[in-house]
Length: 463
Image (cartoon, rainbow, N blue to C red):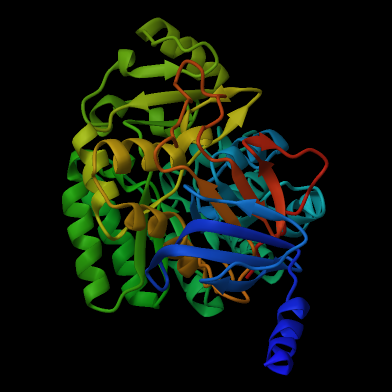
């Protein structure tokens, strides 16, 4: 008997972990695990998922908390230390700029290497490549030369070459903002789809048109589904609610139909009734009120001051450019999208010195607090799946979005009874609450509800 006890004790002693998370309710959408478990972390990886306690150098008692894979935000324009702090407090361990993308790609990744609080990544973007080639004065979005005219054949060949070069440098896909380029031809879009298909990477697409007015969102969705069918490319349609508006149910039917016939088409939404973009962009060209579902100046909110616009202030601010919230999405459309099994959660967020849209700070906590706990629009497991497994699978990230031995130790611990967003349109820079622990690659970035200073465990997500 003594010998048996000694033999049992030796391997247990050998399995001491860097950190143990004890007594938490573990939710793993990949296996549908929903049970109290103990997780052992070693070397930045999940090394054990156990029904019994584990020995470790340090232990977090997670009793009463949900232990989920770290949230993955596929649509995060805010790629600065300020934005990463708000993401971490919202439970996000990986934030990616996939709609607009970046150019040049290698330099963008190099700027963040060893300096990022959370994991980061970006597509090779059509928009920034056009801004560079056509000498547009825009930064995030084009403002003049790329908006006012079409690219010449020579310019488009250079744009295509630059986008391809970004894929060579590791970008996990192509970013495509068609609506911001009124003169981008359907042939050019098809060429970008062909490039993505040949390189086996997805496209992340802001479609050509929005709303019910034809040619509107239905025509725009038909374009990208047809291009996916013609080329074999995988396509992710961004923010389906803000482009679909009241046509969103029909759009989701179209996506479901395309998927049922073998096309790789996915989509996302955020839990807010307002979008946001640059007032100086092509989206606000003449006729924008009808294209945005019949809204008017008072439905626009200037991010810097929180004021609702008038015809006079619209004209003044449009000349200078800047972010404006667009209050155009019906609440029932938000609920419908979040409850649909096809739709992932993604923020489309950005903050700049505390100004911006509340989705940059509160998207994930808002889904868990308002739409799961309070309104029962979807289950807790479904919500976690939309924030973790689905976006990981969209990118083919087998080491993220799940809780299993060998996966990256990106973990978010939240209190399902307390988790809530605090960010508002008037005061967007407010941290979410009820998320006491967030871990990135085995390092705590949020500890007992506070950001951890002096750590930068984030790594680049590449193809």
